Length: 130
Image (cartoon, rainbow, N blue to C red):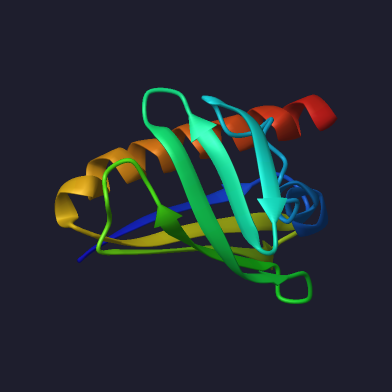
């Protein structure tokens, strides 16, 4: 199993970042995804270049600003996937931490790239809100 982690201090409040992250059907910050649907805690979407994906939302905790989900259907089967986004207030800014446990390990590079472009997309959406 591989663990991928991205961490960045964003010049925005936890509240403004959480408003975007906690809406599990919001897709404007996720490049290559046009639309996300959610039914009974399962979000479904098609990612350009990858295919159909389904993720089970495990935790969407507004009090602790924590979102956790697991991919349950992917074009290339995964043995294990658990992703957690944690937001923490730090000096009036938002410490954004995104950790993903992934197996098989060969999938880690693709997952990490997706996380990086999504974080860039989030920063772009936040900059437009200023």
